[in-house]
Image 1 (cartoon, helix red, strand yellow):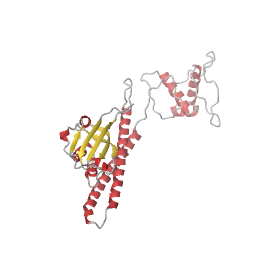
Image 2: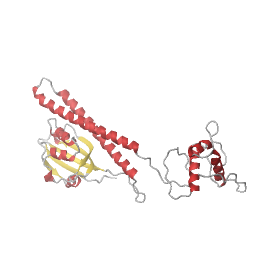
Image 3: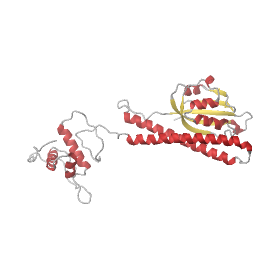
Image 4: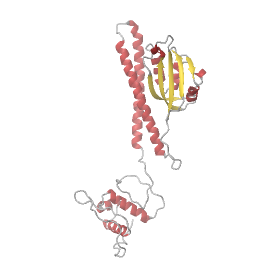
Length: 311
């Protein structure tokens, strides 16, 4: 399927004056052409943090654009809305034009989370997970940009001659830019650490359970959601059989975990078996459960222990 998203296109002179500004650029960024007074100011207003100023220095500085620059970044529209875009910057100087121009294109990237049906609706947990994922993608993108910029500064520094007095101003520029990159890198590291902490603290996603179908293969401690108002008999059976399965059929551990007498648990299990419920079998020596029929037996047999105490 072809990409039908609108492509914003801007063209500036090598000095940073606007030459061309298409309708898609206005619709995407919210800036009118008369509000883009210069490439430097526009980038600084559009991109979050000091990234716009650093990019403008790179594009309009003495080194110019030696090759196309492509990156994805968050940007702020004129109305203050935060969006994600894929930026491409190209200079016609690379093609030998007498009057070089700077071409910029922006393709919007979606910030929406995975589609959720209207019936279910997005939960608070899903929404928070989506926001955290966006933060992770944005911080990873910024780190890549910082790494590329740092490598460029190192390469430029190696090319400067220490004894050339004309290089003093350039050294100062590189130092200031390097300091800005270091400061931005520290902020990104803080965002990443905070995102990781929040992700670890997010509650495990749980689904509504059927009280007539005890859990199988679910470890102890997993959050479980049940409808309010269920009978105590159903709740009792669900917890005993689910806990028994999690403990691999060990009756003694099940009784201890639920705070019941072992005799009570055994009597309850016998009753569930007579009612036709599958009972988790205890492990045999060697870690294997015995193969046997755990379904209902004839109701004509005496129901031993059916009057045992309940929760």
